[in-house]
View 1 (tube, one colour):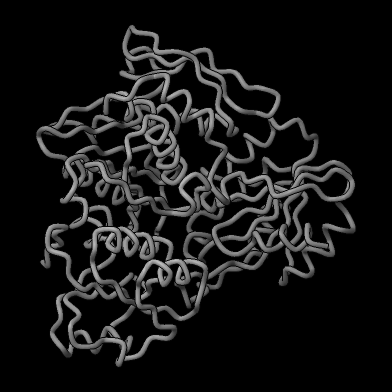
View 2 (cartoon, helix red, strand yellow; view 1 turned 30 degrees about the vertical axis):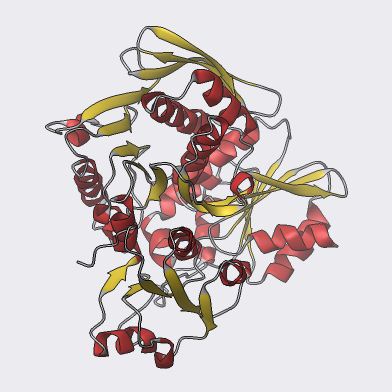
Length: 460
């Protein structure tokens, strides 16, 4: 496999450079004096930013974008062999790396490489760690899967020997990584278009844990069922986080303020570290924060910097993001939740917001996930008072598997819930304006483009 060496900058070409992860990796390489080029189907603020920083970006993917002098080509999972640039790179016999392989190669260039894994919570926890490290002046390099205001985007290029990134399990991407510190937040059934079942997913996370070297560290939640499966026989040190009496890092006295944000005491073994008050809601964020605390303490960060970082963290874009208020005091929030566990956590947090009525406008993400987790989606969405469904966002999928949002609507109605399904965003907006203008909490939810509904409602 081609090896990336920060001491020997080369010319790297990205097929799909405008993606949030690809653009971030390109920016890190630009900061290390690599020559960077790439292409994407559409211009965006991310491609504009890369061009301003010196990257050569072509809009449209063509064979002629692969030119003499390119040393290695990087591509995403969405790029197939019939892509003209991919085919031309193969014809020229150029070295090629997947996005995950490049990220893994880059990790080798840092003394401490933290990889945050889990079915959900990766972006939030990575962002929490980021805020803590910034408060401690640790000058890290960060790659996060969301837009974080404190770093002005999804990437930060630091000068220290510390790198922090998300570690996604889809297509076993994180098995290409070389972490020295691994975090596993949770393990649940997801991406069943790739994994066979939950046991297959658990096996993948176990393999991720096994990547850690003898002098490495695994931080893992002991809320995960049969957690010993992931830890037995590992050569590295293991610390567990949770609320159990024998958790290495634990929380006690969990309460919530008037906004539904957690307040709790943190312990390391028998040592009380201090009390934290978060600025993001929900028990799930208390658990994310506890993992971030464990990571920071193990990296030698003071609890004062930890407190300062966490108390300043108000969330990333699309994670319980407060967008504005409609006439009638309707609070509009947007959230990226697209898995039943995430939906349940978000709606549970919303219940602590002080709003009497919760309206969830949900856009299912991928046909395969909707079909395989139909009952779980219905159970989670039942926590809302009213559910408005948009059409399924297909993402990478072309086969609808005979499933639609109307199937989810029928399942919710069968449970006695108020649910309605619309084929267009315009119909959803008209329905909302007609029915909900009396102090509700309105959550647009999903990993597609459902956030446009809230933006459009607020722009009127």
